[in-house]
Image 1 (cartoon, rainbow, N blue to C red):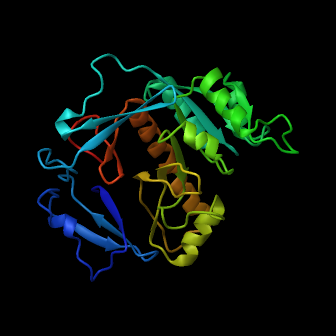
Image 2: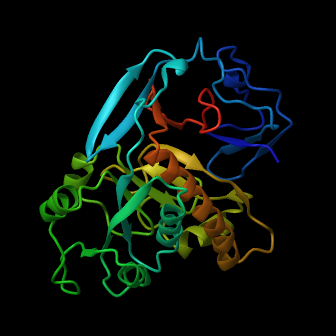
Amino acid sequence: MGAQILGPDLSPNVTCPSLTNPKIPFSKPSSICYLQTNKWTSIKFNHSLSLFSNKASYPKLQLLQCIKSTEKLDDLSTVTDLEVSGSKLQRKKLAVFVSGGGSNFKAIHEATLSGSVLGDIAVLVTNKGGCGGAQYARDMGIPVVLFPKSKHEPEGLCPDELVTTLRGKFMVDFVLLAGYLKLIPIELVKSYPNCILNIHPSLLPAFGGTGYYGMKVHEAVIASGARYSGPSIHFVDEHYDTGRILAQRVVPVLASDSANELAARVLHEEHHLYVEVAAALCEERIVWRDDGVPLIRSKKDPNAYS
């Protein structure tokens, strides 16, 4: 099966100019299928697809390097200029936020131990000190920080204390939200610009925002009649699920699916996708197009992006 590209507001009667744009040379699509929710279209391509491979004409990109919570953006004139420093990359320090069992947290942690992700989880942040993710962290010797402060978690930190703890005490480079259900405070967003990622169990912008979390997402997808779903990883801003989308993975919604069955299928892809994105983040392979769209540079082919 080939790669899939998603785009908003397309219908079977609308052409897609970018597919014929000589500046972005796609190979001939092998098939096209249309999602029936929120006007999203899935266009399936064969294996010869190489996104943005015309390096001479592709727009300028910016390389994202977040070291010790300081954003460094180097303007790059062409794709061929995309090089990280000639020196060996340093392992990044990660903070992971969870509110529940933390299966994505566990997948990322195991990937750091195996070497698939060039980073280490320096701290786990949770709003529920007794959740499964927090217990796993304690078992693995990972420090646990409570946030926010509440009547249920009186030892929780306030936003400014959280920023100080992550930046000062743990020297965190990147923040990964993995099933964390609280809104991230603006203080943290401003302290880690373009360095906070979240995973959501639907193909954003469909079925995202306030009220769409956990099983509620999968129930809404099935009720809508959508034929496809899947996880999205996006950068975090001050709102729920509105930051720039970085990566998605498509799974089918079967006619006989229950919300639990769909959730299991999506979660399986979440584990793989988040590890891949965390690896790209730590290897400084995320770049930004001039129009503000983030892309992931291929590890095997520096001139290919997804």
